[in-house]
Length: 306
Image 1 (tube, rainbow, N blue to C red):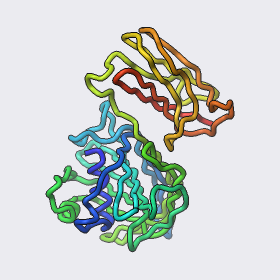
Image 2 (image 1 turned 120 degrees about the vertical axis):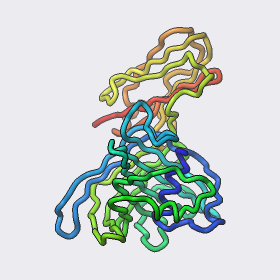
Image 3 (image 1 turned 90 degrees about the horizontal axis):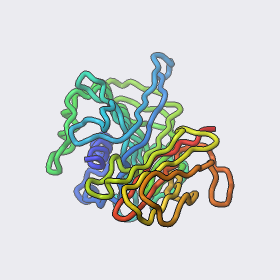
Image 4 (image 1 turned 45 degrees about the vertical axis):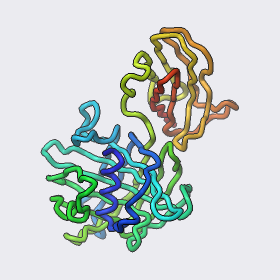
């Protein structure tokens, strides 16, 4: 569900990829966690105004969020048609009254994932963003459901789709999708227009929880987090084994090795000071520390602040 629901929202809400050939896709990667937010004001008057923000692991199959949270993010990257690739980020919010909000950002790359600035395309829907608020009957559609009928039956206060603006992609790969967005969005039912500012998205391929039965005796954490200038990465093991520990950026590039070799059972710790293996300071942002041992892998977020 974690990739299926975002894909459905984009497909039916924006009217793209509705043919049978276009929707028969191979999913390359799922993004399990991240953040997505933006500020908005009524256009052209500037009032009312507000903001939308979602952060954390993506939905469970029963529309709850891991850890009892009321919000989360996810998405994915997949092949679409011919050589094109689509990446998307989706944020969801449980309003606590039986309704949900959903916000999504998407880009279809002509020849594979690439950083850059992409203009909102309200005709072909190859780049843009959407916001649906107060959905009172949100369900998970099945693979055989009529997707357009499913979307038409959603009961929501507003269904905004982008009409102009840009999506700036700063990182995209199987490891993550991040960037900024801004522009106008409109509701075709109410004809309301909203100006979107300070839009930011960042989702990544981070396991929400350990895989059952694989390395259950390994635990990874970091503190302080967020941090500046340094954080301590802690790993506990239930048995001796060879372990690799490294820091990666949002695009999946390795930034620094923390450990490569055998470790005894027990607690271990390494300090990362926000520098790469060449001792060059890295920019503020989201990083990931991944520890891999015999039959298991653990990942934790690292947030380097200015």
